[in-house]
Image 1 (spheres, rainbow, N blue to C red):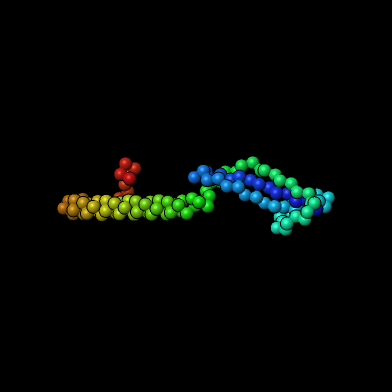
Image 2 (cartoon, rainbow, N blue to C red):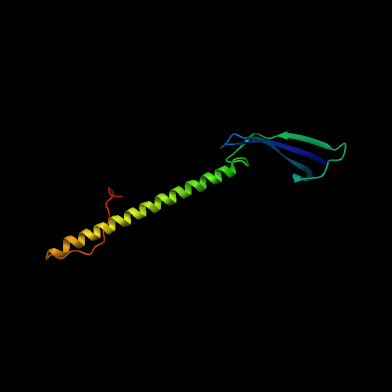
Length: 124
């Protein structure tokens, strides 16, 4: 029976916070070598190895996750309010256009088309 300890350094890509993490395994060899997660203390005299794994970046860490969630919520709320303002503005434009068509078309004897207004790309 032998054991191995994997030690790895993690670095947050968002705030550059760094920390070490380790995993302890029992090495089981039954034709094929397998690493089995272990929580027992190795008995005295047992083979014990330590391996330092290459550093690994993570996108967000425990220290900045809460701040990032708050920032994302604020960004989403800002986008929602901008979108609501855009929809309100578009609806007002359509109502104004409909009013002007009704005013201008009622006095002349010509027939007016009843197509809905589609704004051009420049008006968007």
